[in-house]
Image (cartoon, rainbow over all chains, first blue to last red; front, side, top):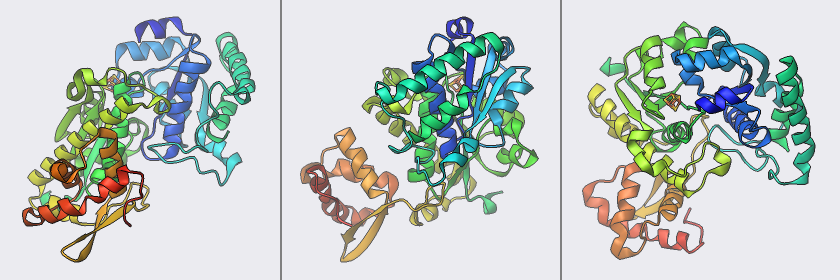
Amino acid sequence: MRNELAENPALVIPCSGIGKVHGLISREAAYLVTDELAPKKTATLCLALLVKGDDEAVSAVQSHACITIDGCAKACAQKNVEMAGGRVAKAIQVAEAFKNFRGAKPGNASFLTEEGWPLPATSPATWPARRRFCMTGRRIDERGSHQGWHHLVQWRSHS
Amino acid sequence: MSAEVTKVGIISCSGEAIPEGTISRLATRRVLELLRPDTTVTLCLPLFLAGNEAERNFARTHPTVTIDGCSKQCARWGTEKHSGPVNAALVVSDILGTESTGCHRSARDAWQVNKEAVWAVAERIAAKVDSVLAEAAPGGVAAAQASAGQCACSSPLPGGKITIKGKAVTITGLPLIFEQCAERGVPASEGDGAALLDVVKIYHSIAPEDEAEYRSALVQYQAFRSGIAPAK
Ligand code: SF4
């Protein structure tokens, strides 16, 4: 993990809330970004390790742009990054994105339904989202904020 | 405390950086939804810091089991620092050892090895919950297992009915138990029915004198494995 944190300019930190599907979507959205869409620009770290006050985790959030993805308005990821002195470049809430997709049945805290998963990563339908994300990924590096992550979470859960 | 104890709190680290964190989260969900739905509750670990006093009091008001991905034991540390002492602490990497090799962080990549790992850890958590409850309130475990299962979102789990001594008996989560057996390759033939019975006994209390009848009733498992829906 140390090399990933050192080399990648942005950290994507989900809340991974265990009680609702929103937490699972936050977690899977983070993996989608760090593992598939922008693996060379982003990394993730354990939020619980940050809560614990681990030196490496605290220093990582202080020295990288952080994008927090929270399931609900309690905003645990955002608050814990801020409490650790981290720089939150963008705070996303999955619940906010849901407002535009009323009636969707994405699954529960344990699994996502087909409605909850995006199209297969290789599908041409994902290309616009990939392009949008990669562009916004660059913007995070250069300006410390952007608007693209919101679209990603929406796309992630409802495509 | 013992008279009031009805639920054990399970706190998972849900660590994002390694597959064991994902396993800790999913195994905790499995216990909440299927293995011990009536006797367990949970709380998001980061909520200890971000939440209010009531949330921080969690471990003071519940006997608590923490489940961590690795030896850093963030869930245990966070719970004990911000809430109170834990009754038991499990570590996924200790439980699985090299068996977690090949597991993935994302559920999208959840292969057979992930599923096996989640089941193995979930069963360890359930056993720990039972022993914590037995210490806190003897007799509480059997009473809790006899009641109907509900997932944490309060939607009932699908049950399966089999006939025992002429009466229909509902086993909570039976279709899921069959799925688990199929995934694990648990032998289903009558001669090997003991293995299947052992799995069902994890989820459903069976008196020793009824075991033979249960074992033969569970031959429907063979039908399930052959692609025929289990009896309703
Ligand atoms: S215990 Fe290990 S896996 Fe879990 S949050 Fe801490 S560092 Fe991550």
